[in-house]
Image (cartoon, rainbow, N blue to C red; front, top):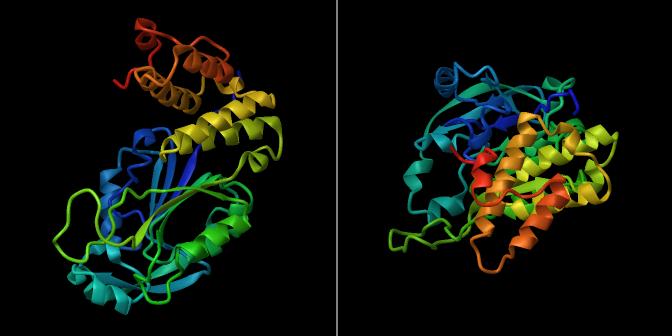
Length: 320
């Protein structure tokens, strides 16, 4: 067993409302650096997480330069931004009142590269209302070194005047060898009016995109660092609707003799194992999967037999 504890650190830029739902299942295992420009929201977050010693709150804007930025506070507080609302949204969104400007305020800004020059940041969550690319432009060193995955809000049509769109963010991340995994989009767009059905409607205006570094990049460095990167990235994938890619990443690590089992008693490793065990257990109930298929894949990854029937729950894989 490797005695080093797996440390996972997430920077959350635009932390209004708290930990993102994708990270909520592992909130006690992960270190969160949460940045929010609204001072009142920061006070609320500090109160909400006062008992969590793994969560730090910063009343600060992350950007491409150190200085001061002016923000527009809107009727919908989650739309606070450095950008003005585009004319297209004003014309085509029937919830225009949400974009109504209330006032403006200034907040200090810093580059992520400067704040965390001596800290390894593993993952980014970006939701800064059009300024995501600006945050990334202040994070070049981290993108090139420690960051393994990014979940970012992206716009496909101009919500804010002159703000970068999906293609700009995707191009930036591809320059640093990230690959797009998915978009968190289920068919619900921005409704033009109230005459809609509940399942699918409107135009695709924005969504969240998920990117990771591929295995060829994760393998850079020592075997221990490669193993750590693969475990962390696989956990990130299970939290972002990409369990198939997590399984493939773990399988490929085994095929090239990356020793993941050296961390087999670490809480992060065990959380990943539990999440995949519950996935495999659920697949056993589907007629297109054979028990042998599930068992063989499990043994390939974990070098042990997959627990069946009551043995499964005795192996501490319950959600409870």
